[in-house]
Image (cartoon, rainbow, N blue to C red; front, side):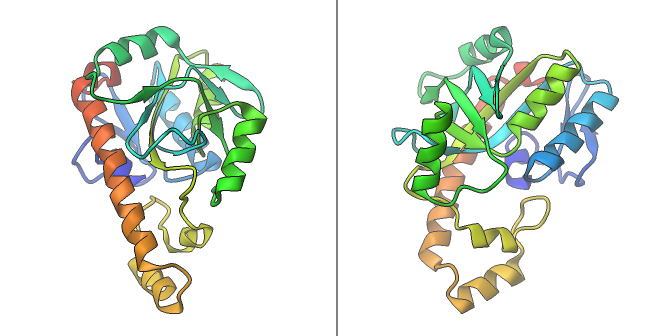
Length: 225
């Protein structure tokens, strides 16, 4: 999403295009979901990528994880388990400040937004995962098919007990930015509360702070420094 991409670069990125960040890295702002991630992975591979990384937010499946906690998974669960490149993961982890709360384990992929604690806990029981997103499985699979190294860098943006209401997806542009007109309509109709939006904003800022820290300290492993 655009908010996630700003943690790597302050440039205004065009949507669904490969943009070079220098000699060693490119970024693709793809938006949410499996199909968007597959398109991004294909575009990056066509542009000559020699490794793929999924970078952004995740939802907690472990009740101990809080917004701003960093998840560097050892495997991605998308119907079956796919390992990440552990040497790449280790190099990046060693560059991060000790102040970050870092979890490993498994990152699950969901095709749907999980908008309740019960849905999150059910996925945790089924997969053994500590967190969930909607894109990493597709990117991991694309990397495996192309025999490319893969890693996921994901930060918790919503805890188990608090999730973005599913109806908010009606107020999101394809790049993940807010459709303010539709958001206002949801507020006026009472479909979503102001307190919910304020909490989402606070927790998203916590996640962005961690992602920016990763980019600052481990930029060489992201190819941007």
